[in-house]
Length: 156
Image (tube, rainbow, N blue to C red; front, side, top):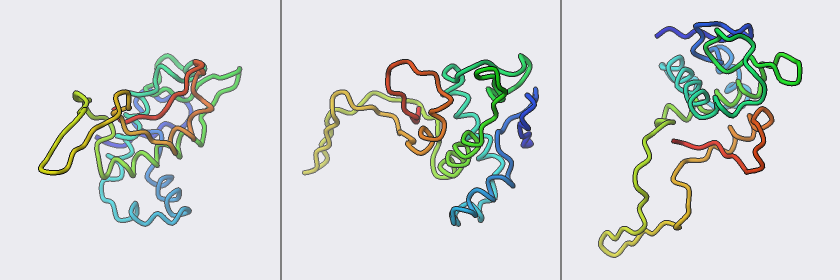
């Protein structure tokens, strides 16, 4: 699948918020060398965008700019069209993580206790099974609706 980057106008066929050039510059500025050698950058950016859409499509503030747009942004928030750079940064962070592991995974039954030889693993009764992406949440939180409950970016 070819990378089709949302340009802020509400494209009907966009599949990524971020271009490879943007991600390259983002990671270069932060001296993250692992990104430079990757050969699957477009796929990783699409996966990261898919994650944002799957996990947050119902949680964003405002409304989409156009009913025909493929992605959740650009949006109209407080009478202004918004296509935040913080969203693009969050997608970059997720794209790099997607190279090492699936961002969206099926959740299985929680392990309460497991004993292997002399090692015992026990998880807290109410602990969250999902990976929390704190950097990503910190970037996108200003654009999420407030429900009075703390929201976290999670790995599903």
